[in-house]
Amino acid sequence: MTDRRALLVTGAGTGIGAATAELASSKGWQVVLCGRRRGPLEAVSARTGAAVHQVDIDDGAAVDALVEAVVREFGRLDCVVANAGTMAVGSVVDTAPDDWDAVIRTNLTSVYRLTRAAVPHLVEAHGSVVGVSSIAALRSPTSTAAYSASKAGLVSLVLSIARDFGPVGVRANVVSPGWVRTEMADGEMAEFGGLHGLDVESAYAAATELVPQRRAAAPAEIAAAIVWLASDEAGYVNGANLVVDGGTVLVDAGTVPFDYRLTAR
Image 1 (tube, rainbow, N blue to C red):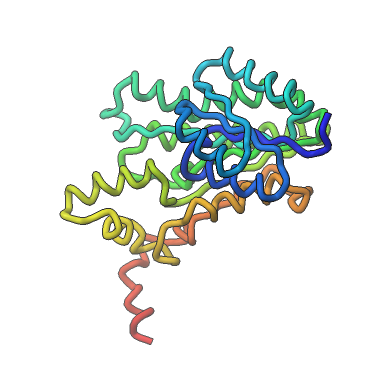
Image 2: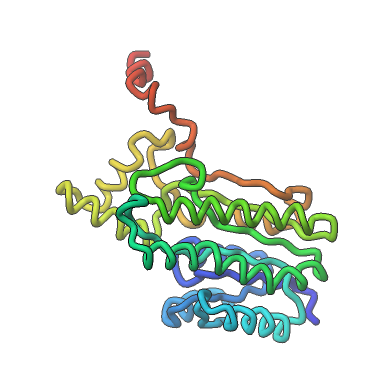
């Protein structure tokens, strides 16, 4: 068994997952990358030296085998970062049952399966879980019925782990980002921009016009919050939902017309 702590990241091939792997590796963690696409995982591994496991997290048996493989390889498991996710656009009426099932399965049920397999090892290591949710769990964006429900469920699931397993040394916390410049977000901006004659940069600017910091986050900024929550520096942080959104959820739609006061000073 090695003295270096082991951290498993799902959805690790791009975006927040890749940035988390890079930062954690730089801080001395042994990192295990999990994802469906081997190419992006191998690219992250080449930069970090992290181990690669190509796994479909929707496959419960494969997730069980993944956790056992990590423990067998490193002799321990100290942190699980549940980052993998998917999106379907639509209201409760517009979302097809198959799409609803797919989003709930990937964004919520897979986290249940992963943490169910991992928590016994985390108890042994006095380790932690970090779930990656979204401010969509706290607010109601248009036409995100399945996504918002799945992310709200993820928050509740992770916080239940904090309550149930805190007494035996396991911490569990959530990071809820706003807009982040990821592969998924780039695709959404390209679609939105195409409808309004905007390029991707202009689409990001339009989407973040009311964000107090007037921009989307970089993946590294979300990764910093995740790795901090996994670290000993956050040793007394348990059951927190850390919102990393540039102040988005502070905005009161009813007072936006009064923003002229900002420019009138």
